[in-house]
Image 1: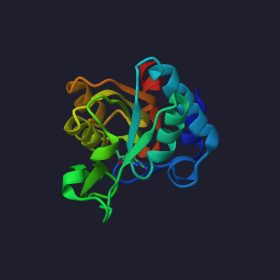
Image 2: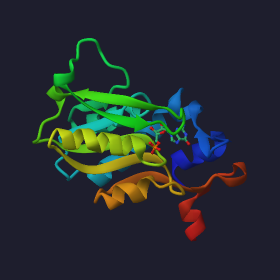
Image 3: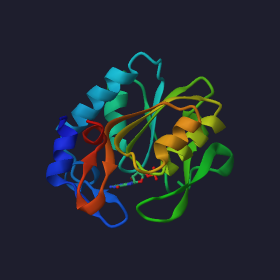
Length: 195
Ligand code: 5GP
């Protein structure tokens, strides 16, 4: 069992609405050993794909994304959830993303300056639930005429529709850990169901 799964079993808390709280090692306080493992696994999987940029969404995706970008030696770009006063409509790509945990839809944006049609982009995020955040990022990449190489996820909730939606768009999804169920406040990993 990898270290991320051990931390989830030890410190993860299941909340109403199938929300897994991982504030003690991923979403608030960050365990660097968890980050190191995520970086190494994602790097092993994506190192030969010619990635030129790692893209995520603020805030929780930034830590794993910067680790991966540092290993690949490419820039990391994060979509912003609030509009900087220095960025005009003509200068940005924007899209709408519905937040699973906050239940609000908001505009997210990136500057056109940092994504071009020649980019091969790896999308990285902390969680994959219904795929709203990842699909919003795919939309931004497509607006720039760039290519999504794959989607790297720390914790996938496989009982929700995100992976299916991304795969239907022809995108490859690689997750460090996949959760089959959070029923009865218990975390069950997909591999344990299959065994
Ligand atoms: P999606 O957009 O795939 O529906 O949800 C992914 C986004 O919602 C992630 O960026 C993550 O921040 C948040 N999220 C979704 N499910 C969970 C969860 O169970 N726990 C936490 N901490 N965040 C979640």
